[in-house]
Image 1 (spheres, rainbow, N blue to C red):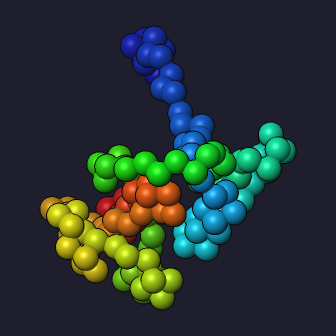
Image 2 (cartoon, rainbow, N blue to C red):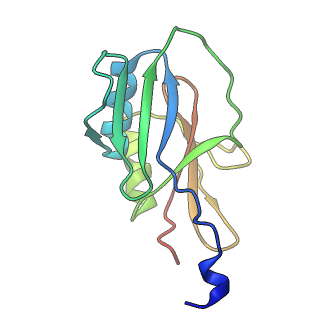
Length: 137
């Protein structure tokens, strides 16, 4: 390590992402069943929070809130990667979850310029999610 590296501040790391949901049980089932996220202990123990591990990236924190319908922009989304996007699309179809590509064509993936295939869909509260097959190529 040289002298310049010693003086560099340590980057902040992601701890968790909080998502406000209107039906905690429904959202918990959605994220667990569709994405196979593993529930972890949550500190509040008040029945209004569910936490899922995101591995080294941190955690996903679902928070029960009032039933307020909000419109969410697709540009603001959570993104998850899976080993095989075609298998994931089959799960979306089986669970009757509508998905689309970036331009908005239904039932079609986007293939990015780097070859990563991706789809977009919404959770029960309308939060946008992207799932892609990026494996750190």
